[in-house]
Amino acid sequence: MKLDYLQALKRVDEARGVWILHGQEPLLEQNLLDALRKSWAKHEVERQRYDLNSVSDWKNVFNALNSLSLFSQNLALEVHGNIKPDANGLKQLKHYIQHNEHNLLVIIMPKQDSSSLKSSFFQTVEANGVVIALTANYPQDRQANIVNRSRSARCPIKSRCLDLA
Image (cartoon, rainbow, N blue to C red; front, side):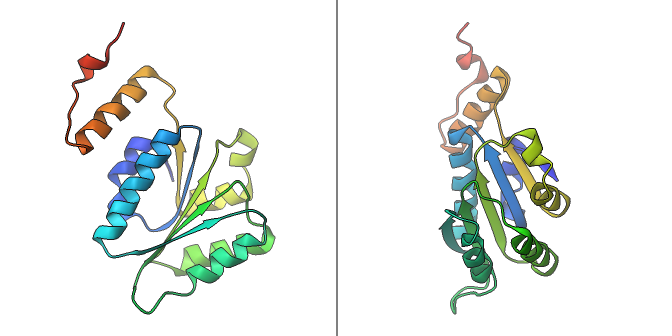
């Protein structure tokens, strides 16, 4: 399933399976990750972070997904990088998606071109998880994001105050 940033924010508490966040808007990425982390803390979900430097790092990610600590029942993994899994990793990803109902794998990537979005990795996640494009292409998108962020910070801004023209 494909979602935009605002749709994803509304579904943070029900996030399960695999989510891919990709885009070139660091503020949107940070806001969405903050919302996810807040939800995880509220629901006592253990969080781990992995940075991908090579394809072999995916092995550590899948090992972590298959092993919980003694003190947690749910796990959220943040995986940062621009490296997609190889064929074996893709097979493990499919297995994880089919057999895991409680944990969450969040993959954070830079903006992807159209050919990358058509890869088997993205197609697998889109069919069984969530792909979120972190974009704010239009001024009204940026305004909506600023208004939403100000509300969550309990410092509401009126949309008309953002009109600088």
